[in-house]
Each structure stands twice: as structure tokens, then as C-alpha cells.
Length: 298
Image (cartoon, rainbow, N blue to C red):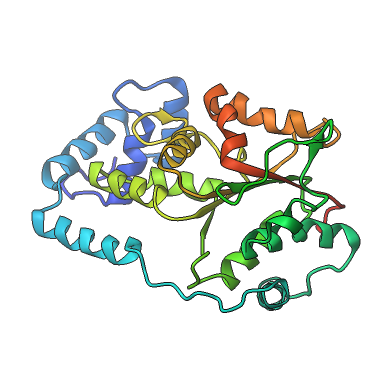
């Protein structure tokens, strides 16, 4: 048995708390045996109780004030640089440099790769005429699946490994400190951020971050279920809140496995995972862009 007299650290407290020792199941006992082989359930509960008794659960007003000031500096509207005379040539040069730096290789010049990136270049420079001519904006019976608009963000859907993530990372890098900058997070990174929230104040700051500015969520639908003292359909809430606030959002996701890259079934995954309300809104929230071509992964 571990010594009870010494207050445990936050990491051990979180691990014990996550086990659910108040109402242990066989799965809980197996997990506890693996993580804490010399500890009984009673000992674990005592450690949790001692930690909560001796450790302040609420931040002081001074601590809260300092944290608020910190996040204000991060999230306040920073003066952004307008890119003078932004053309596709200038953006392509910036993108190519960022891509080479991040990936260690030049962006592919094969036909599929060039067609994939065209709508993104025209989107970011605001060239609607050429944007609507791009082959990667899908149509059904001659009508755009999602009516092109620069008031929307975009949703990139494609096969595994055909460059969605690397392309968006390069755009994130080359557009920093401009008036069209955005932040990029993987779906599971967002889950990690949510699960690391330790109190109500942390959650307020998490939601403040999720509702601020343009954001790209990479690999949507691959995230595990979020849990922070209760399960939550995290991206359902995030997408609904950003829709209501009119925030520009970018998404990358994969086709559904085994559907031969069927677009309709691919998009339906959103409804299955996040509900019909979110699915109905994707067409007014996103320009739909399909990435084609073979995987770059070896």
C-alpha cells in the first residue's frame, strides 16, 4: 500500500479520479491493478479525499485575473498585415516555400495534386470566378453540392494520405500574421485540450478558444469520445457554436471506408456522428472540396 500521509500529485490524482473508484466495476479493478498494483480501492479513495481536502479547487481572484489577461493577449484581435496585391503567383510562392520547409519535399506537380490545390488558392485570394471553375468543387446533376461562397469556410474530403493535412499545415504557416490567418488543430488534439481542463474556469477558456477566429479541424471523425467528468459529443457542440457565431471554419476528413470514395456517404458520416442538425448545416457552413489521387504515404 502507498503511503497516505503525503498528498499525491495532480497527475496521480487525475489518474485515480478517472478510474471511477466510487462505484468500481471489474474493468475498473483490472485497470487499477495495472496502474497501481499495490493499492486497494480504499487506499485510492483516501488519496483522492486527502488531495481534494488539501488542494484548492478554486483559483484565487488574482490567479484568475492573470490568466484572463494572458488569454486576452492571445485572443484579442491583433493588427494583421494585409498581403499587398495577393495573387495566385504570390500565394503559390509562399505556399511552396512553407510546404518544402515543413514536409522536406516540394509539393507534387502531378495533375491530381495541382487540381486539388487550385480551389484553395482561389479561395484564399478571393477569386470567385476561377474558384467556381475548379474541378474539385463537386456537382450533382449539374448543380454544386454546396453553393460556392466566400462567406463560408470549406470542408476538404478525400482518401487517406492524399495531402489534405500537409496542404493545410502549409497554408496555416504561410498565412500567419495576415488578415486571412487561421489556427489548425487535429481532432484528437482538441479532445486532449478539453480533457485537460481541470475546473470550470479552464472549460470557459477552452470554449473561448474554440469560438474565436478562423480554425481548421484536421481529421474530423477520427477523434475518440471526449470525457471530462462525463462523456460529451464535443465536435457536435463546437460546430454548432461556431455556426451560430458565424465563425469561418475549415475541416479535413476522409471518405467512409468501403464506399469507393462516395461523396454523399462520406458527408453522411457527419450526420451519423454529430446528428442531423449539424449535417443540415454543413452545406451553408462549408464549400465542399474533394481531394483526388493516390496516397503519398509509403
